[in-house]
Image (cartoon, rainbow, N blue to C red):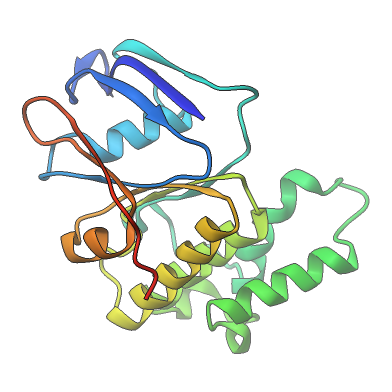
Length: 217
């Protein structure tokens, strides 16, 4: 799906990662791991198209897919007067006309996504009422309604409770088993080794790819 050719990620022409050459295969589930400051989030943002490469290149095998994006929790503003349902509904906007509104199927998908993350009772709550874990569940529900073929998650488990981590991990495994491609920046080595078939380690030195078998249970 994504082919990297000596790709170097960084900011304002300053490299952060070592050159990367390799392929993120369609339908794979890959964790980007490594020490703080090694460029994990920077690489993810580069592949998502938010920042340009410093050097090298990457290209898509076929047409660039729709990307479901989950940003780091601290990068988002929680003070806007929006409801949980409003935020989740944003995931449907690319496929909805401005005049047509949400169809019944779309509304049901939103309800179903809220149920899957355990927030159905808080659909009309404003987002400033949410705990950190509830806020992350809401953002994940927004990704679910997109049904994007490629999902990128930037530190989805940071700063949230273990129950939320488990719920999100189960949903990620479901998405992977349904054929979606997942690419996630993670710190939890136990969770990575237990659930992720592929890892890309960006510690100092040559980036290291590892492929294994995922354990669902």
